[in-house]
Image 1 (tube, rainbow, N blue to C red):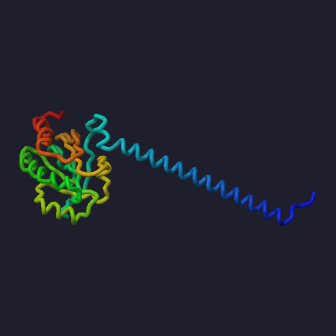
Image 2: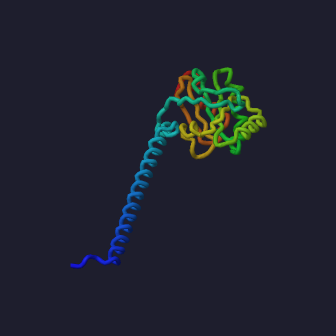
Image 3: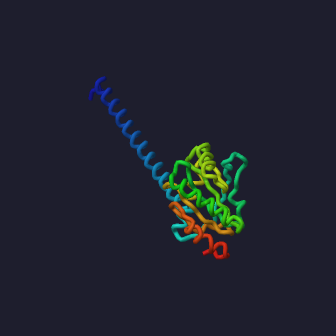
Length: 201
């Protein structure tokens, strides 16, 4: 039997190259699929661990602490520093019309309930700090405002589908209620009164 001619050798070489490229593409596709599955699984696990998800499951989770810069640029604010108070924690942004509409409500809540041990804390997120400061100045905000530049805190609390979202935390630091809407004074009054009487329900 005669050895393969040069032409046959070229054909065999090309066939090997094509086969190798095909296997390489298949391996890359499998690796990409595995990475996407891992990313999806991670997002599901993280999503199920958010404060919002736990509340939706009927739990009353401990409020995860955070330390964020004060919007006025002076120091940081730790959520844990409010332990012993009932906290109204509002996630907002300056470009959000309902956030503008509800800010006077938070001012009123701070004035009315502040002496009784309530602290309103606003977390500005997905926003420019300068715009947020203009918001605070124009609306004469009288409560604590912090800025979440990385959105890490906002995501940890499960605020992923828009603003505003407000949580109510009892004196022991457990999250009791969540409002995924613009709040009103009657809504907050109803949430705060039982906590101020000592009930955590």
